[in-house]
Length: 397
Image (cartoon, rainbow, N blue to C red; front, side, top):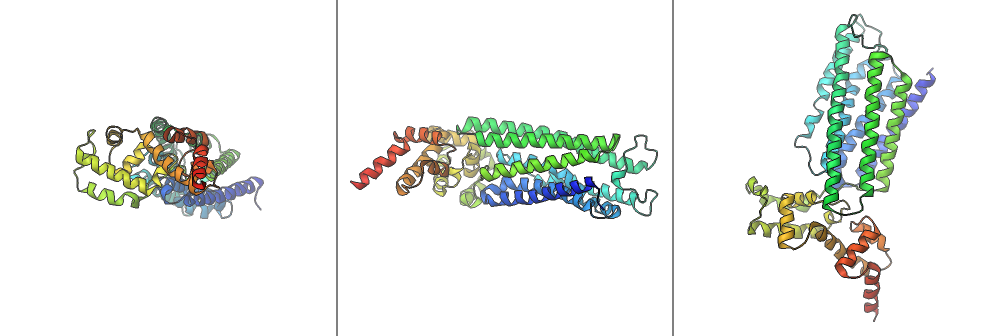
């Protein structure tokens, strides 16, 4: 019969596993345009889900079976932080060129755990002792090789945690600063999501690392481990809630939106993409691409659209895009985006008279009614409601 703490662990782990499945379904439901960023959150969810599955199996099978499964489950702990780092790189518009390398450590970890299984197998002097029952003996008298392997794993995780969390915070902060400079929209949802994710993950990973160090070197505490698992579940619950009420927070252009426009770029020397000055032929090419992107519509209605995203879709640098917008179209990036959105909103206001102004504003990429009203009046000279009333009145007369 299971002990009370084992029953609690089983309940929390089952709830956490169910929550990870729900999170993956939500992320998948945001569609193709959000998949490039969300795939890393899905990998993170799978990794954490595997840790919950490990806890569930641990309470239901014999210690020896659990030991043999260690090389399968343990490597997933080393996928937590890299997946979050790749997620923030993706939403910042600077994806990793070789993302799989960030998960390369999982293979040697699996090999090390195979060595641990061999040392703790039924034919060794440590037969019958589970990983959970062994603490690292710093003088390495009994089981010296085993202790060294276990300490190596813990040290590797701590180093990975420290290095990646520093880079995650740096990338996230720079991303928020870039968004603030490039597009003056209501960023409350974005800022809340990023900060909650950063703070929540920083807390649980710090607790996870410190508690595992304490368990290994000082004394094992099952109640502390239970607390960490419960915190994971709460963080996942909050992530699901934010995603549910703010669908498609981070989206990327569809590949087929710009597939044809990139074919000519592949034939051009790469040096042409890094110049800050654009020659006349490039200006015509960039403007044509912008027209196609505007016609495709979806990218321009991304509520968190930034200049790097549009530049990436066009196939130029942000500096080149800014140059063409300012010097050849006479518009800032902010004005260009708002004009496209306002034109679409003007059409919807007339063609769908029963639709609310807020609903139309959100559908074309504005995050609030006040922001929409200001942009609309700046471009048309009228508020959305006055514009709709005037057009409908003219139509009736």
